[in-house]
Image 1 (spheres, one colour):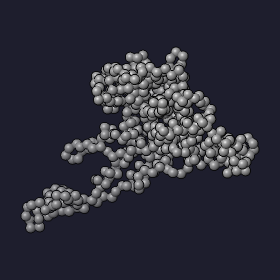
Image 2 (cartoon, helix red, strand yellow; image 1 turned 90 degrees about the horizontal axis):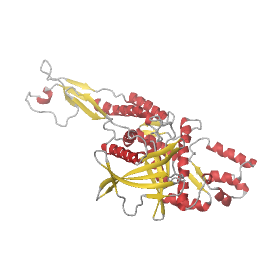
Image 3 (cartoon, helix red, strand yellow; image 1 turned 45 degrees about the vertical axis):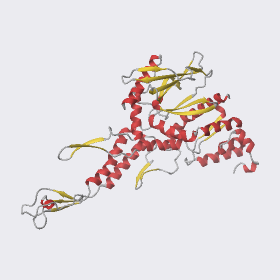
Length: 458
C-alpha cells in the first residue's frame, strides 16, 4: 500500500472516530489496495525475483498476464451490457428516468463500476442534484467508509474523495449520509487536510456549501453494490471482497508460468560456445578483436584447447513450449473455477488468452454465480431509481421497476420463452405481461403497443 493511500484511510477513519462514528478498520483498506495493485497490474514489489548469474545476485520483475483485470472484465460484461433493460411505470416517469440515465451515461459508467467493484470488493452509486439537474456518481471501494449497518446492508455511509485547490493544496472532501432520530436522512459535508504524521486539520467549507442538508426522507441517496459472496477476509465487515480474493496464489502461479515462456526463449536461444582465443586471434595468429561487438550467438567458454586449437560447440536446446502451455492452461482453469466461472472460461491460444464464447448451460457454475451476482446489482439499481424519483419529486415503488438482465447467453432462454407462450395460450399469462417480459416494455407500454391477438406470439 503506498504511503499516501495509507495516510488517507487512516486519516479518514481517525476523523470519523472523532465525530463519534465507528467504521471499518483502516487495515482493511490495505487489503483493498492489494486487490487494486493486482487489478492495475502494478506488482513490482510482489513480482520481483532474485537469481545467481554465476558472478553476483541479480533481481528482475517477472512478466504478468494481467488476469485479475480480465476476470473483472468478464464479470462486468456479463452483468451490465447494452441488452440490460430497465422499465418503470408509469410511462411518463419511465421516459424521464431514462433521460437522466442517458445524460449520466449509466450503461457505460455502470459497466466500469461493475468491473471495479468486482476487483475491489465494493462500489456505490451516489445521486445528487446540482443546478436543477440530477447526477450520478460511481464510487470505488477505497472511497467508501460504512458508518452503520445490519444484516440487510449498510445504512449510513461516508464517502471520501481526494481533491486539490491551488490555494490550500491537496485535501479530502467527506460527504456523510446519516440518519436522524426519526430515521430520516441528512447529508453532512466536511473538508480535512491530512498531515504527514497522520493527524488532520479541519478546513472551512467553500462559500455556498451547507454543513448539513436535511433530506426529510428515509430513501438513501446512495446504494452499495458488491459481488454476492461471503467476506471471508473479515466476516464481520459489511464491505465485499474481490472476485479474485481467494485466487491470489493462482494469479501468482499464472504469472510465474507465463514468465517462464519468456525465460525459455531468452535462455534457450541458440549459442555457439567458443574458446576465448577465437575472440582475440585471427587465422594468422595475430592478437586483436575479431568478433563484431553486436554478436549475440557466440559465447566465450575457457581460453582454448590443450593443443592450442579453437573448440566450437553448438548449444541448441529444444523449447518446452508444449509443457508450459499445458501448465498455464491448468492454472487458467483453476483461476476460472476459483472465480466462480467453472473450469473452461479461458483458453491460452496463439493470440493470447481467449474468453469462452459459447452459451452457458443453465446448470453450470457460471450460470449459478452470474444469477447470484445479479441480485445485489438489481437491488442497487432499484434503490438508485427510487432515489432519482425522490430528487424528481416522484414516489417510485419497488414493484413499479422491472430490470431485465441479459440472459441471452443462457441456452435455456428459448425454452423459457416457449413456456411463457404455453402459459399465454392457456390463459395463465396475460398478453401485456408476455409482451412486457419479452419486448422489455413496461405494462403500460405493452398495453398500448399490443397488436392483434394473432400477432402476439411472433
